[in-house]
Length: 354
Ligand SMILES: C[S@@+](CC[C@H](N)C(=O)[O-])C[C@H]1O[C@@H](n2cnc3c(N)ncnc32)[C@H](O)[C@@H]1O
Ligand code: SF4
Image 1 (tube, rainbow, N blue to C red):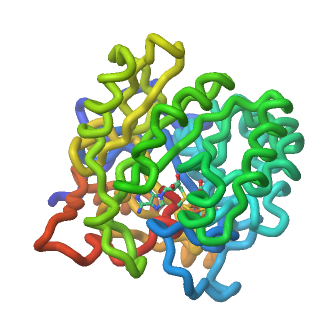
Image 2: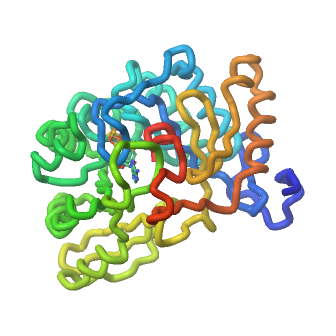
C-alpha cells in the first residue's frame, strides 16, 4: 500500500483531533484519527489468568523495559499529536514499582487540557492500596477485570488471585469516588451461568459490565476452542431473562451497549470474533518495551524505543510514529476454529494489554 502522509488525506478529520501547539494529528490511510493510546506499563502480573498467560511465563529482562520516565515521554509525544484518551494497562499496571509516579506525572496533561481522560485497566488486586492516590491524580474511571463472584472459580481462572482482595479493592475505589466498569471474559462452561448474577451485582453498585469474547492471543497451554463462547449466544440467553434495549452509547472503544430495563445499568459486548469493530478504530497500543502495535490483531509493529533512546529531541520519535501510522491496517483477522487450533498471534494479551 502506498504510504499516505496525514496532510494528503482529503477526508481527514480537521480540527477535532489536532495535536498540541498546532502539531498535526496522527491520521491513518483510512482517515481514522488516532485519539486513543493504550500503554502496557509492565508485562508482569500477580495473576495467571488461564486465557491470558501460561502458568510458567518468562518475563522481559529489565533493560528491555522502558523506564517510567521513558514511558512518560512516549505517552507525552502521543498527546502532543492529538491523543485525547490514555489507558495504562499491562500485565498488571499496579504491580509496576513506582507506577503512581507515572500516573501523577501524566496527570499534568489533564490539567493542561491536552488530554481528556487518563484511565487504567486493572485486575483490582492492588486497588485497596492505590485507589485514593489514583483518584487524587485526576483519574475518574477504571476498568476492573472480574470474571466470576465465586471464590473457587476465581482462583481457578486467575490461578493465583484472591476474590476477597479484589472485592475489597473495588469497594475502596468506589468509596474514593472512582467510576468502575467491570470487564468479564466469557468462558464457556465456566462463568456463562453467572452472567445474570454478575449483571445484578455490578448494576446494583452503579458499575457497568462488559462481556468480552476470548481472543486467540498467545500460547496458553489450553484449548481456546473449549473456552470460546460467542456472545450472540450469551445475549440471546440473557434476553430471555432481561429486557435488553440497544443504546447508541459508545466509549470510544469497541463495545456495543444495551441498557437493561430491570436494573437500569449498561451491559456491553466486545465481540472481536463475531463482529468486526475495526472500521471505527481510533486506537493504537504501545508495549512496555516501546513497541507500537497499530492493530491488536496483527503482528505488524514499530520500534519506538530506538528513536526514544537515540536522541533527547522528539523528532525521531515523531518520524517513527508517522511512518508506523501510515501502515495501520484496515482490520484484524482473528480466527478460532477447528482448523486453526494454534493462536492467531503468538504474543500474549499481557504484552499489549487488551
Ligand atoms: C491483559 S489484561 C491487562 C490489565 C489487567 N491485568 C486486567 O486484567 O485488567 C486486560 C484485559 O484483557 C483481557 N484478556 C486477557 N486475555 C484475553 C484473551 N485471550 N481474550 C480476551 N480478553 C483477554 C483481560 O480479561 C482483561 O480484561
Ligand atoms: S488478564 Fe490481567 S490479571 Fe489476568 S493474567 Fe492477564 S494481565 Fe494478569
